[in-house]
Image 1 (cartoon, helix red, strand yellow):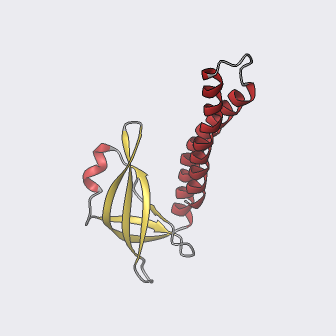
Image 2 (cartoon, rainbow, N blue to C red):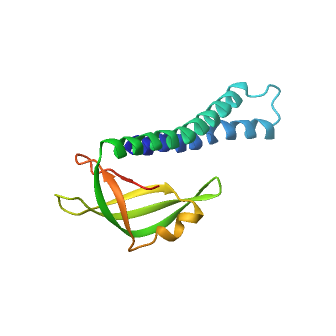
Image 3 (cartoon, rainbow, N blue to C red):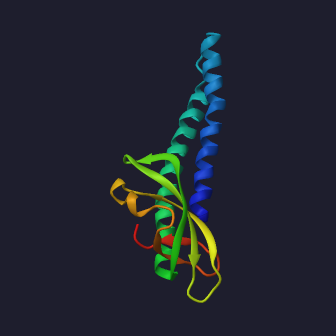
Length: 148
């Protein structure tokens, strides 16, 4: 899930960088220059495309990382500590930030936070205090829910 976050940060960096060429384009339109700022328009399109690619890519990479954790990880039980909405909707389903208290079979308890798109039909099962099955990587303590 490290790469998912890195790619998402790159996407938001591209989003912020879009404003530099946007300001140039708007400023040149306001002062009515003779030639359009082609380089600024190209940069605006470039950063917009990178933003979209990185945003989509972060979900693909995140799904792949969770699948690796499920395949290589150790099964454990976890208790949901808290559930919060990230404000993001994907296919009209909320992306939730879920804080877990993970109890490995032969190790000390630790907390982890995961983000999942949770269908509305599953929301009653994702409440604080509920027990869930998870997989975790022993080295990094990265966690993936088993059932979502």
